Length: 209
Image 1 (cartoon, rainbow, N blue to C red):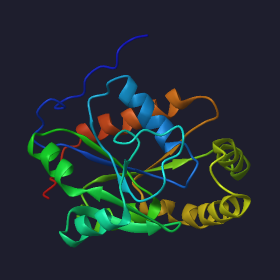
Image 2 (cartoon, rainbow, N blue to C red):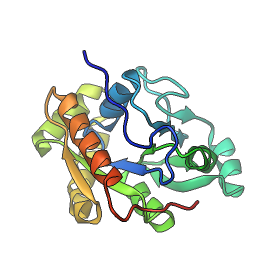
Image 3 (cartoon, rainbow, N blue to C red):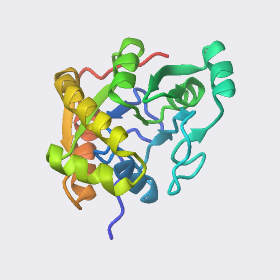
Image 4 (tube, rainbow, N blue to C red):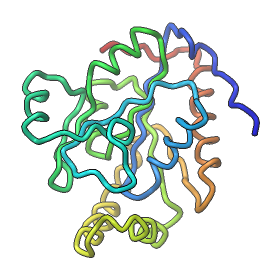
């Protein structure tokens, strides 16, 4: 397997990118980012903080920072989140300090959030690059959610209804990337093409946080 070539400016970029990855639950955002981490892609990956219970396959500090509701509220009270939202009865927040540190070091950064979180970040960082991840169909999305075996039938129905509404928000994103069945590499390739295109802008975004 060939190694992923480094991108212009990744080690110390004057104008580092903030790539916001979003999409309905079950489209495969984690699968994409986990593969990129395994292959040491040159990004700072920001780990979201949540009060949700950890799934069996998840690792604390890798997939999410799993904390109590009380601890979450303490961070929220100190304005420690870049964005914070309650989704499906649980709190999710993007910690602000790791993002600020990465930008200060000129490092390109990837943040994974839900659709609501992406909208909140856009208010704070409109210069970020927003990417919507898609499943090939609603049928495939339902299949992926079922395979996780982490939702009840009622939860599954709610997530699918929410996904249909979230698809209406796609025009608010800069790019859309399809995550095909059993081909996460294709989605990663599209993401890297987006990054390269942004690196070639004649008028690059200047992010201040």
